[in-house]
Length: 539
Image 1 (cartoon, rainbow, N blue to C red):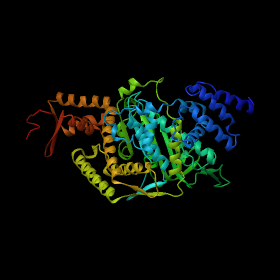
Image 2: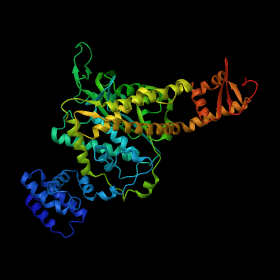
Image 3: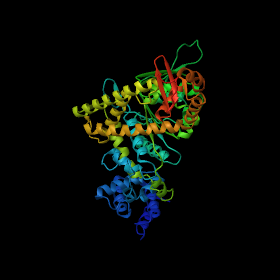
Image 4: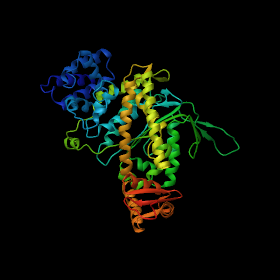
């Protein structure tokens, strides 16, 4: 169809009586305009947006004519599928969204970036917590090393977040929403700066090996070939540390990424620990030789099903440095939403709202001309100090009770996460620099962290559940078989070869369940069934 014919066709479509209510007709209309758009003058574009705005039911209620024309122009420049979703999106369905117990902690009703994100993403059946922590991880990824808290060490905003749930609980919806917004940001940056822009967000393929993750973090801008010695074979590629090594690794299933082979898992974990916040990292790779990374800030948003995790890896492998760096978020399915939501009546992600969310990230963070420190107000600093003292005391009491088997995160890592969460809440409000963290940000960060720490315990128990139950039953049966009490050393000698020296962990589980108790008789010690007494285990 020639341009003139298309113009005439558009004007004929505008005369149709049902143009105001028929989304399919509106979609066809905008697609025709889209085909003309790049060749139109700005004056002609303004004329078209003025004509179209009153015809589109989604736009007709805009607060003023300028806002309406601007929204129409935004929609026209979307991909065809997104154009249709933008037209059929019903804001009333989002307004009718109801919270379940515990979800009122999240800022979904507030007029700042996180609140707008939650209003945009929550149309499905996922727990609101999944969308909130996905948004926090996304926001931290975009910040990279652009924003930091100048504490005893530099605290950057990138996070490792794991969403745990059984199948169909909505964790995939949360990951998809975050990934979609990243794509929108990159699409806008490509249109503005070109495909080679260093501002593009660095998304790492989910099937990447550790070696390829290293390579992706080192590029863009890519490596350079260095001639080491012309008498030797070939060249050695060295990725020069000329930029911050920032990247985002989305994982549909964390257990698949880690793999089943214990050796491979133990090779990945030290790298993932370093990639979170190391100043410098060097690795020899088969493909590129020596890879040097500078100012690492890897972000991970991963999904995991507890039953898959327990069949794939031992949970204690994730202990230590890596486990402390992960924000674990576990939720059961929200069944009321599952009953109300299905593929046919579900609300699509609003592409128009996504444009504004992407604009915030570009205008307020990506386009920062310099790195910005976050400053805690005196009241916020005092609140953080109180929280730290509380966590140190809790860590001490846990250490006294369980020793190296203590399950709580270390107080330093808790404080690190609290600083990240507080600062991201402040960033979400915009209007910086200067970036000030207030007492209210710290207070909310404490509540948010404690809620997820409890969910972490649930997740760990679920992920270890079947295997732990088997071995705790074996220990109880062993004690009963031997009269109800057995010396500590004898128990450890019997079970350590089977549990890779994890006997103490399972004993602690039984102590928490008040099924087994530990008796210390000076040089002798016993494990016994609760309620059992005999001459051997009694003074």
